[in-house]
Figure 1 (cartoon, rainbow, N blue to C red):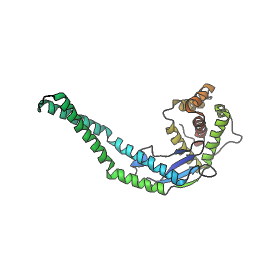
Figure 2: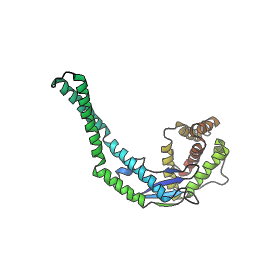
Figure 3: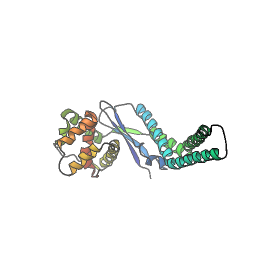
Figure 4: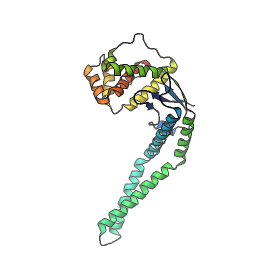
Length: 249
């Protein structure tokens, strides 16, 4: 069954492009699905050709990492075994005037030759080539359109930049309600944003505090110091979007 992979383009001082190619699941599926690009109202921050070029590079980098990671520990174990066997063989069987230097050099070269050769084999495998070709076709066919969800996120981000972290306490003049298709899109956006800050515990700390009834101002101030004005504004917009999806972050 085909599914949709979202690509989100957020305008600002620097355009932010969020895509699924940092996740391994898109490279292992027999059907990579379609790609739908979403951006805020008005002109797209960058041209479709420029975005596709960036997506090609991100996809190829992600595919390379995915297929190299799949057999990494096996390759590493065999590489170590080759080094040990070669070293012991040269130490016990082959005698030379300067044994240590020659044994280490030959053993290292043998292990390195296997390791890099196995990487080349993994990247020339039919599975890797097929995944790249399928995803290139999906990127070629990507359709870009305006999104109310991106509009909301950009407006919340801009509000946070203009008013500071305290804007997180502001209540909406009218409750925001998302349609069913917008909920699916917002959920995909939240997942990509969560991955963006997975190493930044301050974002999850604020989310946890918000679920317990209140966010201390010190946490919000620390968020801005750690991420900067624009990135912290985007993080606050993400935290306001989560409740609209009905998903627990």
